[in-house]
Length: 227
Image (cartoon, rainbow, N blue to C red; front, side, top):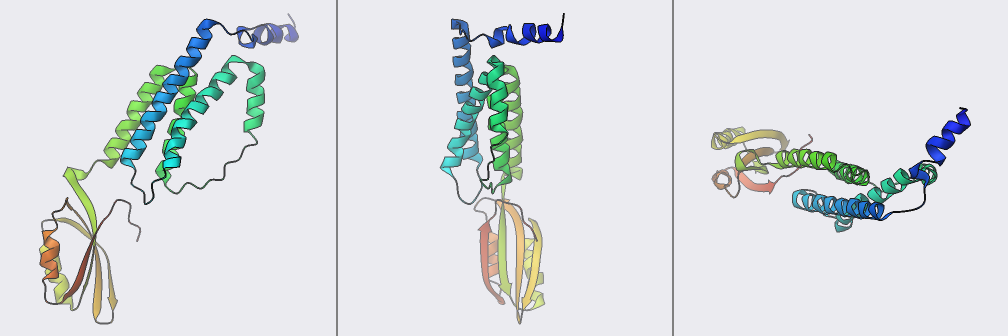
């Protein structure tokens, strides 16, 4: 048998090249798309719940659902017809997306949506479910507060080095870290990162009552500090 005959038998005469769609195929397509839609909606809800950025984009969150379903559709198309798959590869290879993604985790959600659509389109429900559970656990534990504590950034302006020692004494017993200490003339600015239970900021009032302390600012902090 020649190479031409092998290609003709394995590709052109295979069921994948057949344009006829049976009732079972239609049912399978509907199930795959609905499964992809379900995964997309759940990913959307998880993203909305755990989002910690500055500005929440509802359009981006909705695009996670659409991307899951559309990726599933593409996978179904290229897995049922060889000619379409070759054309799809050529078409997608020239597409360039230039939308800037500000949050690194947004890329994770985007790739999660894409891979979920691919596995749903391939009817690999078990793989999609296992990967979904693993991703959810990673996101859950990454966002879980340590011992129910939250991180705050405290900016203190005071004078005299002795006052700094008094501030440190007040912070004893708390989980804190001095991030910076800058002198502006007679004024010293101290930036402290402290992990406490929510609304338990009585220590800030004690610091503010120190004679040489000018002001105290306490800001809830949800991101990484660079400095």
